[in-house]
Length: 217
Image 1 (cartoon, helix red, strand yellow):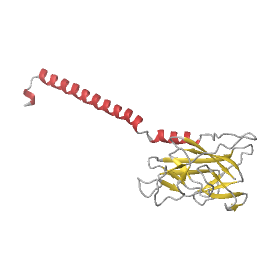
Image 2 (image 1 turned 90 degrees about the vertical axis):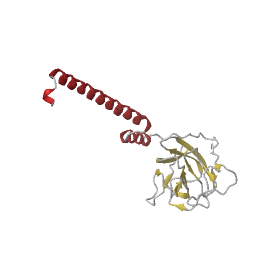
Image 3 (image 1 turned 180 degrees about the vertical axis):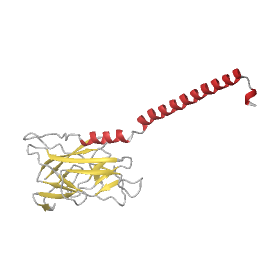
């Protein structure tokens, strides 16, 4: 039957088929490109995410410095920011601007300022090992980098540990770490404080850089 179709009709049909195929191909190609562009803005690729984390790890420690005679610019904590959940301990007073916060478990002084006495804190080597629980809001997912120094000219470093591996100059956490997605992440940890003084803690996340200043007395 096909042989009986005039040649000019078969040629026209073939041309129409090729034109239609090109239209479909270009339409699919446009859709793929549009999806790729949208994905780049709405959902970063693994390469973009890796680059973001590398930049995050290179953030410098940028803490205030104190001259002789300057008062310690102590941070005031907040109550009610971190909800009461069974897997979290550390009390009602937490420090930080979010999405990550920490508590000073040895704080016994009244008020909501970030101060605590070193005398009752156990001493290990040349520093006092203070319990410092950390939490992160359920909305945050990603790495957390914590570093700290004395704000005076000595620049004495704070050291941290949340795994039992020993004191290190930085504390690296990864959220989420919670019993359920709707709950807050929680990490018990230790912070080694060299002695009395004014200290700054820099908390880096993928969404913010936060600084908390406390005084060890």
